[in-house]
Image (tube, rainbow, N blue to C red; front, side, top):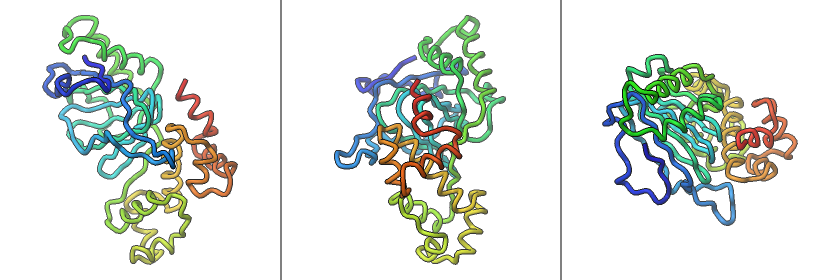
Length: 279
């Protein structure tokens, strides 16, 4: 199965849905997904965003280098280095990335994915799971159905099935007024407007805004914004931004207050979190 790079052509791609095997794995290495703005290194230009699409087979994407994001209807996931996301077959989704990417994508036929989650979710990977994905990307496209290659594919499916669910997920509201707030916050994450302030901007009372957001995301406004800040922070840190720069761009008074928030939410400091994933 192919491992793509910046030198690969469209002719190297074979639609995984057309490959008569339950597990098909592709790799991608050394592909620069975004250009970094000279004046602001946190800004992403998304030169290679993969727009909304879907496959008959389910899709598990593992990021070894770089930071990937995935948007599915009703949700937004961030895939940090060493992390993965599962998207069931038939579900429209969109990927974009930051930095130089090394990733592996396993496509899994529906009948082989019966033990896997029925909804999109981030997964916490183990060294064994990562090595199995890398190894399966080096199998022949039409590997033997009854050889060691098939046993490897079965073991890979077993490892995916027991992988813990990850936490870097942001529920996305469907209401147009709430989506406008989302867009405004993404344009200026440092804006510390109150619930009342945001409500006035989109023509909602504070109470109505709070109720709608809880109904559509299951989170309070403060909790939802903090989760968005965490995801942006991991993305920017993965692109090389300093802790101080990230703290400033998220509107924190100091790097220390940002680190405290990060540690409470993810159980470790930003520096250690990224170092563990780079290792």
